[in-house]
Length: 331
Image (cartoon, rainbow, N blue to C red; front, side, top):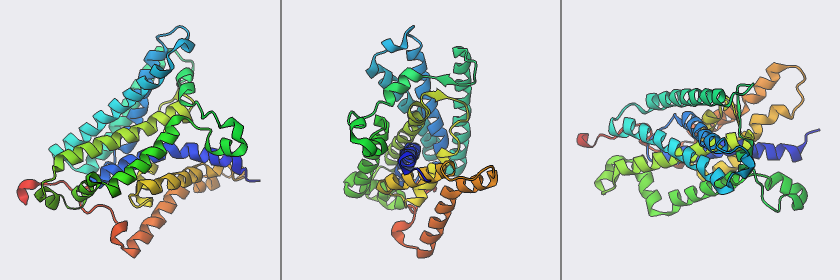
């Protein structure tokens, strides 16, 4: 029998990295930058948080003596700084040097994974672990602290309130991003930059600044997805190449939600549920069936892409200048 009470919390936990990644990528793409380096950015965000927490936690003989606030702030700041540097690198290459965005994004994904694996492997050697992983249980416990009401509200608390603060931060960030993009002057100007940078430039909007700020902010948000995965979802355990394809799923989610961060909240839960559905549906020893279930998020994305293309509504299309460099002197 399908255990819904167990399935929903796991689907939500699985969805948070996707929500962080898709929200960050939506903000980036609204400026006209197509950042396919999101998987690498999430990886760098995760390993930078691990480096900060590893150095702080291992500076104590007894990790229980750690300051709780610093135990959260240090990996959080390290994650944001690492992700910011990835965003600045992407912008320098694509906005300043006008390199091809697709190639740059793919190169940054490769670089991010290699960067994470190198420093992850180095930390594993420093820790002298018997297995190829690092366990930061004390820091993870701080990130996984649930709301006080979770235990007293029975099934509802177990299903919706049994998560760490980053899970709720992801939802708040998505809602705030949606409001800023659709209801504020800054959001209007950002969308103008993504749709028609020449017209926006003629109107006095600083194209370079908007692209830099939107992309760097998007990378910082996406990086939090990597930090959440390690500190909350994986219980503080870092293993090289453990992220799987979550970064690519986050990019697929952008298309699925038609570039709307508020829609990403429910859509990410759907994707998270589809991602782990094979664990809850009996398939016996038939591995082929399990692999088919794992394909569901991508199949759904392709279906949505086909439907939106056939309907061809302007509001359902990506920003007009997405992926295209802007050459002011040619105008």
